[in-house]
Length: 172
Image 1 (tube, one colour):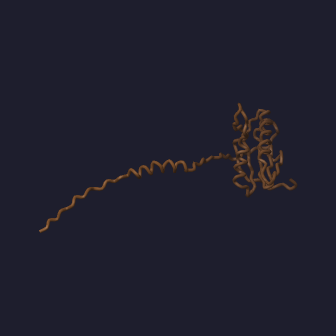
Image 2: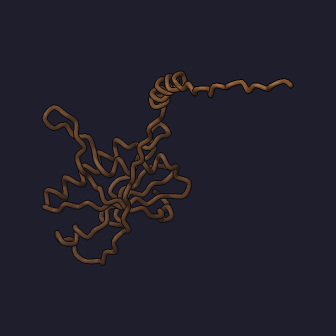
Image 3: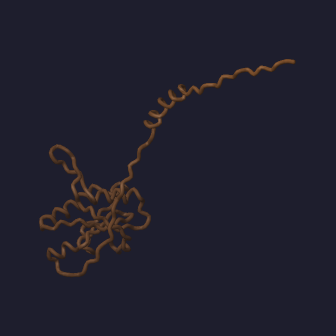
């Protein structure tokens, strides 16, 4: 009779040192390669309704400032329905610099009459691309101003409303 001897087996130890070393290197590398995105929320408001009255200071507060965006350029109306200026495309691009300058002039004129207007209506034709709308909102909201040797955003018309553009008038 032969005796069967059981061989004593030793339990294998789990060596995770090399795995931990890999994780120590891999995690910071992956974090450095990650793209951090910033989501900006653009707040919109519904346009206010205004009645027809005389052009006193109270009426100027209620009048609507409108920028109509067409395929041919910008039309700025103030008060509502009165064409202040037509800004055609410049080199097949919208002229945001001229629009910002005109909006600054309107804001300064209103401030000189002690009116702090914050509302603006952006009326868009069909097929205006998204990037143009965002650039238009940024242009209408603020402009860069130099204060004490640093550039800060100065407020123009932060309360922005969007709407559909009226049909183009003949002869404009």
